[in-house]
Structure formats: structure tokens, C-alpha cells
Length: 253
Image (cartoon, rainbow, N blue to C red):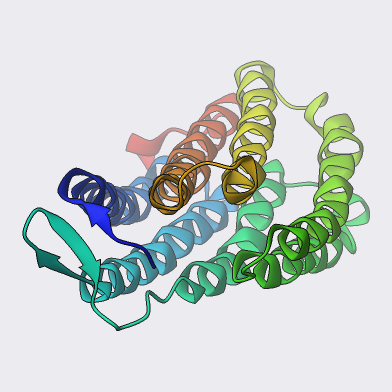
């Protein structure tokens, strides 16, 4: 860790606080909203609530670790000697990223022959993507970071191929409004997941170490809010649209 100005420390502090609040609020919403969709789609919202609950817990640990890693000295925040544990974030991703893909497949409610083996393939690819990225995250030189980042991009490309291939075909058969939401959620996945490697590469751009530390923490946190909490809200919209298209009325159930 490196010394930070008060504004740099506070920016990360406040973004972490915002992320915890977002995940906690999303958890309550997803549980409450399950009754608003048909029973066949409630599993997707349950997974959404699980994702943000896991993220909320890990961000509380990250938040506490950030506070403990620095001590104020005058107008600067100096390293306290306690390490900042960024591994919490990767543990979180190992659990939540596969679940994000499960959410999407679950809300599609694909026939058994179309979804057979899909969960496993996507989960393994997501696991490899995160596991291969971690050694580069903790590396102290850019060359090592680049090598592991490149390896991590291979399963990422495979996931995109599935999303735009097999799932793309399934989306075409969805009812009107749900089809629009599903098209948008694929774009959200690509945009938010695409932001992670950009954040990952910040130290390789030659920017100041303080700016790199702050940029990485803020970038990852904002991406997580969009890729988990907002993504889950879109899953709800899809489930609600499909439920209504199938004649489900929440007030009658």
C-alpha cells in the first residue's frame, strides 16, 4: 500500500459504503419481489438475493480491511502496517460470478435439452476466469500481471461466445418485452465485465501508484454494483415481463 491524501482515502471509503448499502437494499428487494413473478422464475430472484448477500458480506470485510490498512498522519493517510486484504474480492467473485450466469439461464427457463450441461460449462469458465486473474492482481510487476490477465481473458471469451451464441438463439424465442430486457442484460454483462479488465490494467498504464490504488478499488466497486445489484433488478424485470406474458397476475396469487 502507498500513502493517500484524505480525499483519495475518503473516496474509496464512501464508495465502499455505497456498495454495501446497494447490496443490502437489493437483497431485501429481491426477496420481497419474488411474489411478483410466476413460481417458475422465483428461483432466479432467489439466486439474485444470494449474489448480493454474498457481495454485501465481502464488502463489509473489504471496508474494514481498508480502514485498518491506513492511519491518519496530518493531512495524509499512511499505511498502518496491516495489509489490505483484496483477496476478499476474489473470493466473492469465485462465488458470485458463476451465480450471475445461473441467474440468466434460470430466468430464460430453457427446455431441459437446451440447458443440459450449460450451468456446468459456464460455472467452470467463470471459475477459471477469476482464478487465473488473481495471481496477476497480487503481482508486483506489470509483466506478470499481463500474462495472467491474458490467460484470464480466454475463459472470458468463451463465456461471451456462449452468451452470444447459444443464449442468443434462446432470446429470440422470448416474448416481446422480455426479449428487449434480455438483449439489454447481455449488453450490461459485456459492458460491466469489460470494465473489470480495464480496471485490472490500471497499474500498467504508468499512472501514479496512489491513483492506481484508488482507481482499482473504485472501479471494481462500481462494476460490482452494476453487475450484481442492477443486473439483479434487470433479472426481475425479465421475470416480471415473462410472468405477465404467460398470464400470471401477482394479486391473484
